[in-house]
Image 1: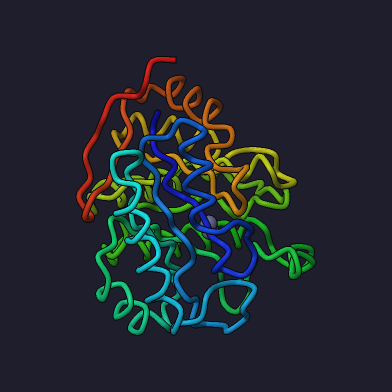
Image 2: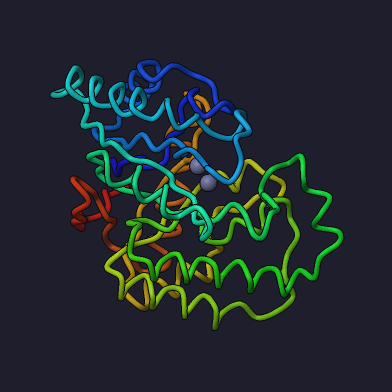
Length: 267
Ligand SMILES: [Zn+2]
Ligand SMILES: [Zn+2]
């Protein structure tokens, strides 16, 4: 079984399930490796339903490391984190990322300007914008994020489609630019199955991105972006089927910020 590298915990304020409950559920589901990757404090807002507070980060890290130790032999637990890309608060974020022994860092764009565009509370703004322009702005932000070389995995690469608002423009050139940058940076991107649980009803990123990624030889991980125990590993069969269709034969695994490629399991 390939690992689920995108698992949130109750500490982020919008998820359910104690950390140990998550680990037990993952074992029940047959995982031999998982990555807990909750939101790093966002810093651009102190809205406690969006992430833990900065003073809670040490407790997050200690809890994951303690479980990793206690469950060793039964499941390999990786210390991950989902860090936002937000240029104006990067310095403080960098300090937090440098302080702890993360196994991998997911880089995600959740905010453009001052709009947290994936938050259902602010979804009305989609009606007021030029969608094509917004999609391209989002892709540019992801390219910038990758160029910093601070992140290992690009999270949900086309999150902007979450509520079903699709661009008309041809995004292939922007996808290609982003994928080339990811490869140059020695990073990868994730197939994130959570899109299936939102109005868009499709995994992130869309299949054409994954096909292009395979063609360009850009490594990939899979994550459920689960916010409750039941969603761990959810729809991994769909993700693996898409990877195979696109021509991928392996996925990326992480330990101590080092990536290795291992063959996809036989179905
Ligand atoms: Zn995210
Ligand atoms: Zn997430």
